[in-house]
Image (cartoon, rainbow, N blue to C red; front, side):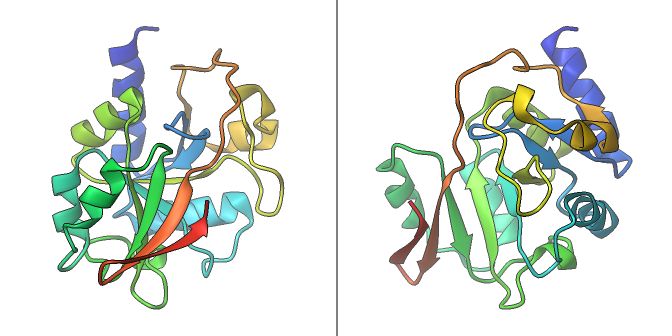
Length: 188
């Protein structure tokens, strides 16, 4: 299957509220349309994860942040230019996302993704997508496609073909909280 067909297949599933298993710029993730509360709930159920534990949202471009964070501090982009590892930022003032995705304090974890498949998919969907590790809550995060449990593969609506054979060991993103220009490292 070629790359564009793989993107089209993932897009069709996301548009109808389904779940996909897909490669990111870090580890393989379970994803859905981040504005669809029913789809987000399905991910929590699949992962056997309480809805109080937040998940990450992926965006394709910096400018997209303006649609999903109220009054973002644009200095965060200068900070992100200086990091070498994919970095997820927790922002205050989430807007326009599924309510069950936003933390109780109104914050949201967002990463501007660099991975080609993700970028194409998000741009085509014209909405952010959820990204959470492809495992049952509490189990180790799979570092390659081969490590993803069959139970996860069987319960999503589409498994992306792109990069399945990639054997490079992946690691989760760094996570930082950005508050009024101050950075707090949550996960290095």
